[in-house]
Image (cartoon, rainbow, N blue to C red; front, side, top):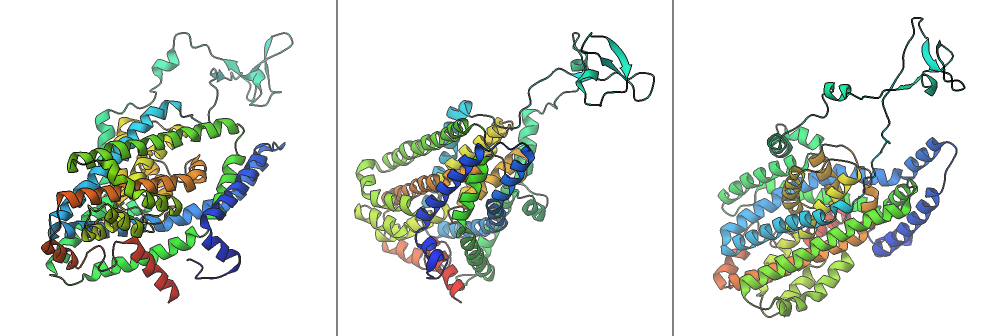
Length: 518
């Protein structure tokens, strides 16, 4: 654990993370509901109070964003090198890569479909001002004098007795001929071509990678990481079995970043309490707030359901010509562990045992496909990225276009592969993806709601991920029957999934714990 076996309160938090988060979440809800009924005479005082109450949560998110993006960058490079290397070992590698990419693309697609089903029910909670007619102030010949209306008799005269914001000197304009409308340039009209050109391709391909990191341009960072991973894989292959020095540096950096992120994650209960209390305390209509977040949960649930029934079950039946339900009933223990732990890595031993218990998956296939999928297969996150980003966009009054969905599908597909193996990493990726697609900065309004329910949504994402890992293992076992030559090829790879501890999250966590001990 993070505390290294310490006792007291820290030890309790480390040993009972879910319970602690629930306790602090309940405290946050209670405080937030109480604050929502607080209506001080000075509205600014409540705003300041909410700002300080949300300080811990804000610092939590800022620190996560600081370390998770470089951690994702390193993870993507390592994953690409491993996938390229595996593809050279045998047909199993390319089958695994193809299946994982297919399921992830379909996950992002179904996330978009489920979002479109519920998007019309989302509520725009951005700062709205009631439309009002245009006003003008008419000056007189004397400086500082304006035409003013006497409320008592309706007469109009020049006066300097009124303040500039006094309604007595404001006159309504009735734009009968629509003169101001025709002379106004209005909103700039951008063609679909320009939207795709500027909103997708220019965001994906960076002109300055340092600037991409500075702007938290997730798409550009991932694109650069993919290219670097492909190039590094060529260098690793030319090394003829020798370990790459750069790969060693990346793996050590991954272990360091992950250790720091684990320290930050330890503060999750306090951040949950802070963000929930701040988010709820700002609300005046709690019923509308909970109704709105309920539609996000429903959209995500439908997306995960589509992914399981149409992609996993459909692919398994189409590629193996066998009953998928007789196979899936064996992986229920792995799914239960996934929901309890919210970690694909922690579920790896259960997943391997479950797929082997089916009698259809060879041990070598299980030991290879399941840990590899725990690193690169994040279909649950791919569904949720799209749902959450569009929900936030509607909540904040952003314009959602077809290009937004295309960009989110690309980011969800590629970004889910680089999702760090820590529970709250997905939250940071949602913020980064949102800012990338909609051209904003900082944490969007309403993100506290997503954070408040993430303890539950994260477990649902993990169940989806683990189900995908087990299904792919079954398909690979059927499509690529194992033989001794393939076993030798997989076990002899210098960048393999298990031999060097570079991709399995359990190995990463062990490395991080060893670093902490030292």
